[in-house]
Length: 348
Ligand SMILES: [Zn+2]
Image (cartoon, rainbow, N blue to C red):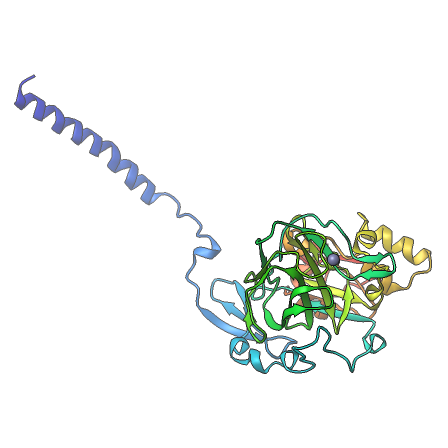
């Protein structure tokens, strides 16, 4: 093939290729327009709506999405009463004026939302559970890990205690969170925070060790409310590294050392369990508490609400950051339907 023919052939090939590409392109252009996805639409804030929490607003965007908005959060953290009142940095206990009997029957703990996220402090198998242990109580869980592995804060908060504790905890970090919950991390080999530090979810606060009364490197982890401990496994699945609830109803009875999550969360059919417990003479709140869904919040799976006395859709919907219309749609009911006590409503 001489050079002229070669050039001609290449030209022909190029022309044919171009010809075959152009119609396809123009065809694509004239075809039906693809429906844009919600998240691809331009997003600008169009409105904010007040919520029951004066610090929090819901911000509505032009593409029909929304999220929580706390304009003053960062600025006012230091001024939140929870980070000022009953604030003792020298002792592990700091609510001396509040007795167990002073606490309400149910404390509603908001754990996460679109602004406040969760990170499991460590991930691993619980070797020693919360509960009675010989003559004393084991007020937390023990998770064996290697010395030097990082320990993270589960939620945003402020460090209330960070020092060596001679009572057996060894190096101990206590973080207080905005909802009043405190998380205790004991036997650390090294601290990574100081008293008064504000910490963000997932921040490393210290490292695994075996300081204090410890039989080997492990994390002794406690959750406390007003100094009172309850089983951390109510809130966290340490093995999966997951949070069990977005909002947790902390019952007064959970502060009993015999109230172990592993025994109270073992059920698969919440409705049947409520029925059984009511038949067995348990009061409503005990039955409802036991029927809280497992792992729903963190897994993104369906979330259920068990109807309590006085519940109306208008109050349930904002609590879960959803709408009456959406709850009606999920449950095939209309907004005027009468809610039954103990009825399980899907809210997400
Ligand atoms: Zn322990």
